[in-house]
Amino acid sequence: MQTRVPVKPIGFVFMALLAAGCHRAPAGYPGQMPPPLVNIITVRPQALPITTQFPGRIDSEQVANVNARVDGVVLRRDFEQGANVTNGQVLYQIDPAPYQAQLDSANANLIQSQSLMNRYKPLVGINAVSRQNYDNAVSAAAQAKAAREIAAINLGYCSVAAPISGRIGPALVTEGTLVSQAGATPMAVIQQLDPIYFDFTEASVEVLKLRAQMQSGELQSPSKELKVTLQLPDGSIYPHEGKLLFQDVSVDPSSGMVTLRAEFPNPDHVLLPGMFAVGTVDEGIAPNTILVPQRAVVIDPTGAASVMLVTATNSVAPQPIRLGAATATDWIVQSGLKAGDRVIVDGLQKAFPGMVVNPVDVGNSNAPAAHQ
Image (cartoon, rainbow, N blue to C red; front, top):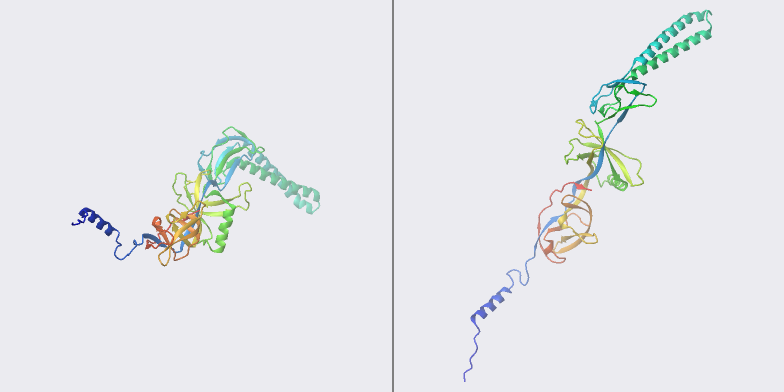
């Protein structure tokens, strides 16, 4: 009896052969897939300008309160409210008639006393007039001269002049108002606008840190004066550069803040007292700064930061780092990286510790100034 061997369908055989072909390793990579491509940068320290931004207020360099220095009635106002005035410009006229009369009387007394002194002078030498009478005449002449000078000064005070140049506010008295020297009647306020101040505060610990960085050379300033720029409330940048003037010698005990002040030219009077602005202080140049793109940094839930490095054998190795300030696109790395390290910036999802990768160096773009 003849035994029949069953024949498998042709389609089943074809599928088996196709499956076997799919499991065959590619040529050149026996038994494994090619290493994944990752983009890297090579760490190169660079000089980076360090800037810090502070909100603050515009303040006048000088504020003069114009007060009455004699008693009298205001005859007229000689300035436009809100206008710019110059030092010595007449602002008000107080009725001068009583003070002119006092000056005239003082002049007459001076003439009379000087005449008597001049008559006694030759007579005292021949004992025709006693020395006491002559001395009294000399004293009277001196007193009359002083009284005349006082009367002239008071008459001058009737013309109320601006003590500084600047912008004057509203008139605080009107024509016909009786003003008083004893009460120092306020008449106007003048604020100097050019130059003008920008006042802001900084934490005392940050001031100490900046000073230490300058002294150690970690920060290098191209000049002795730190430059300041201003951003105005409308978002525009003020066209004139300012300079940091001084540091307040005391710290506010309630806040731990130190008051700082910058001076700006203000020829067009764009900056006005009380205006809010944001100042950017150029603190100096950090000569050996290491930057990495923000997308290359992994920060875990505890706040610890790390990057993935590509070693000399093209294997992936995690590296903890300590971060400093941030720029628009990068982190400043304070420790954990050195020149020549290769940091993965793209392809992190394909790179795991210990695996071999195919690195492509994409370079390191110039980063903007770091903002604290």
